[in-house]
Every structure is written in structure tokens, then in C-alpha cells.
Length: 58
Length: 444
Image 1: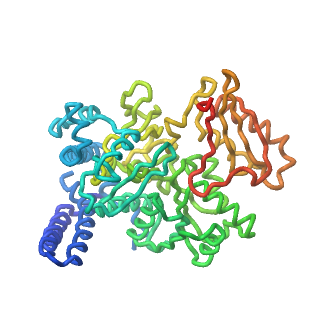
Image 2: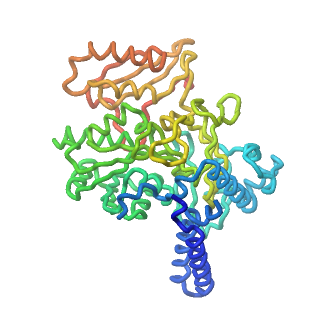
Image 3: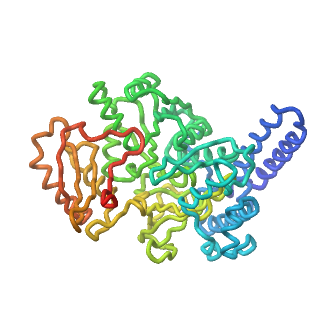
């Protein structure tokens, strides 16, 4: 099953989204709507990491 | 589109065991270091044992890590920050979810979760629901009094996560819930086994509705072991004409296991998110081979706010010997959770499991779903009283039922009982977790 899925490519895109979300959080400043929504995005990204990134080397 | 996809995560759920073990070891190191660096309680516990994060290199090293018991959590929570205590690994500002244990075994334990932990809860339940055949087309009814307990909150969020439609049946009473299932044509439901049976009895006896005629085609149970007890599962499946699946989890652990649609007579441990060890109850030796019962020591490998590292759950389990036909490589525990080490008590020198009594009572036609077991002492002798109810219309079958009950109890539990037959609907009814086992010997 795992041969058909390009885990490395998926992980690369997850890391891109994570970096962008992290940058958005840094830019939040006095903008709670930006900060709190990026906290939620980062939590969802963590679930992608648990599902994909953690097993990319296996 | 999603119908043919049998796994929530086709890579993790079919990973060879050797790779799962490597993943678990890597994750254990991470969560151990996380707790060591952030929690006063964990740092102190591990320093006393002389273990630092860099000492964890193998499963043998993991087994040297001190266990945490529920009683320790209660002491921890007397400390700051209130109300979680010094096992908390994040600031209070980062905590977004409060839950607590039901207090079945004493003072409730408070549980903090960040939003990431809450996503993780929903993720662990998503594995469960997908494995039990829930799909985006399902309309899931949740007849649960939404409150401080976690179980079906997480099921609710997971059902949303997998794309199903959720109908919350919060403050409705049982009859209103049944009518709502009928009205919205709900296809799936989550509840404790006690309540699944209670709803069916209410529908039949008070509303003249056959629950089997309702569109529910699958039910997920939690909170009690009933869905893994063959006779109880069979009663629920017959009553609702639906597949009934078990799942085991706990507030301070997470949703760590699930039955799949193959109904293999056991639960898959979600080994991607949890490390389950089985410990011999007398020697403390770790049991890796199938067929030997012991108590579970469990680690939630990704839970951060209030970590669960080598938690002594006292759940009695054993590994199954055969793999599951579903193709998942997550190991199975045979027969689900067989009870709690606390509940499996010695009576007349024999180990008595309330689950074994449940299996007998619910396997006999003519007896209702309810029963009560009371263990007491007369002088030095243990006395067990089993109260059962005859079904309405089966009042004249006592003579036939009694010898069958006596034989089955002796066969399955090796004990003799004082039997009391009661009229239908005279024993207590429960909506969530039932309290059918009472040990009064400690009161003397």
C-alpha cells in the first residue's frame, strides 16, 4: 500500500504549510483572529505530521 | 468515493510490526523528554529513578521508567496550577479543554488538553469510526448528556472530522431521542451498552416502537465492556438490527483501541498513537506472548498538556494470537477489556469477574438485561447474591431458567450464588455507566 503513496512529497508540502502557518502566527501582533485561527491550523498540521511526517522514513 | 477505502490511514494501519515498534520507541523518547523538561512532577519522578531522556534507547529502558497510578494523579492535583497540578506541561493559557474522570474508583481526576490535544482526541476516534464503517454519508445520533465526561464529545468531533453529519441528542429524554432517530433517519449511534439496551427497552415497552425498525445500522459502544461480551453484544445487535462495535478508552489516556467491521472477537490497539504493555499482575513481568492475562500499562505517545506515560490503567487484557482478517497490523487484544484489576476480586478464594456474570445472565432468554451482584460476608464466609429480573411474560419460566442459570454460573465462574428473581423493571436502571457490582465485605 505504502509504495503507491509518495510520503516524502506529501511531507514536503506539510512542512511548507507549517512554515507558512508559523509565519502567520508571528505576524498576528494585535490581531487575535489571525493568531487563534493559526493556532488551530497548526494543531491540524500536527495531525498531518502524526499521520504522514512521522513515518516518512519507514 | 470513500466507500472502498477501508483504512483511515492506509500506511500506519498496515505498517509491519517491526516498523511500528521503531515508531513507538522514537515517539516514547520524544514524549518522555517533553514531560521531563516541562513537568515538575515528571522530572522529580524520573530523577528519583535515575532516568534521563538520553537513557531511553530500547524497550528494556522504557520498562525501567516508573509507572504512574491514578492515586498519584489525585496527589498531583492538590498542587499548583489549580486544578491540574504540577504534571501540567503547558501554561494554563494554552489549555482549551477541561474534562474529568467519572470518579468510579474514587475522587475524579481533572484532565487538561490543549487544542492540539483535542485534535488528537478526535484523530484517535477517527481511526475508530472509520474502522467501524462510518463514512461521510452517515448521520450520527449521539444520545449523550454532554457534560464534563469526555467519551462521546470526542466521538462527536471525530464524526465531524471524517465528514459525517452529527445530530447531538444532548438534553433530550430517552423517548425524545428515539423519536429524533426516527425523524432524522439517523444511521449510526454511540452510547454505553447499558444505555443501548435501555433505549431498546423503552422503545419497545413504552412507545410500541421496534428499535430494529429504526434506520440505525451501526452502534459504537464505550464506557463499559458490554460490546465485547458476546451475549450482551448479541442482545444489542438483535434489538437494533445493527452491528455493534466496541471501543476502549479513558479520560486520562485517550481512545486507545477499537473493534473493526470484521468483529474479530477483540480490539485493535492503535499502536501508532499508543504504546500498550501488559504486565503480569503478580510478578510485574512484561507479557509479550498471546493468551496470558495481565494489566495494561499504557503511554499516549502524542498527548502533551497532561502526558500519560506508563499509566497503570489496571485494565485486564491479553494479546490475541491470530492477526485480524481486516489487514490491520495493529495487534488485537482478545475479548476486549476483561475487567479492571480492582474489580476482579477474590470471592471464596476464587477470582470473580463481573463480566463473566454478565455474559451468563445476558445469554439466557427470559432474563432481562438488568442484574445486580452483591458480595457480603457471613462470619468468615463470603456470600454472593445475584439478583436477576424475569422478562415481562416470562414470570412462569422461573423453574426452567433457574437450573440453567445455576449451571452456567458454576461453569463460567466456578462459584455458587444465592439467586433472587425479581419482577421486570424492579432493579435499578442506568443511563451511563451501570453500578451492578457491590462488594460489601469492606464495610464489616
